[in-house]
Length: 134
Image 1 (cartoon, rainbow, N blue to C red):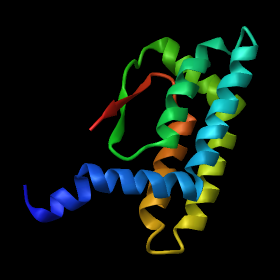
Image 2: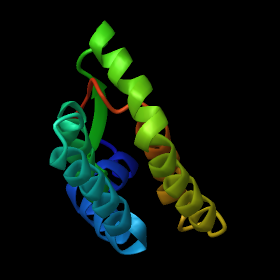
Image 3: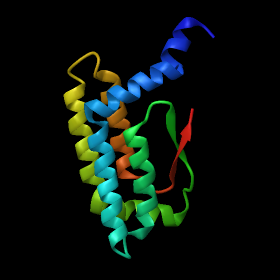
Image 4: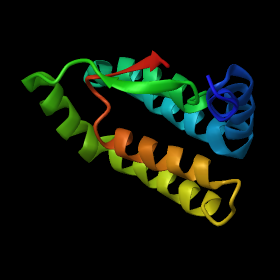
């Protein structure tokens, strides 16, 4: 492994990026995803979306070194994602885009802004997604 790959993809760099991520807005993102999951769990109707919200909350707190993967793309997932988009996905995506815009104005913030853009896209269709370690 060359030095560049070791620095960019190594455990120490991932730890540093995750700590910076958490301080620069990851705690807000993760907390909003947890709030969405709790609000969904309170109702019987919202229970199908609760696991996805909690799974993505953990990813929002600590994303570097992890990726989002497809788990299920069946008809039920599509229906749940459409309802999610209308009820909660748009405001979670909006908050990620606002944070991305604020972070993108600095060179150091660009990787974090890009992560928020990816989370904004995920916010729109979270059902059927999983988190895997890289």
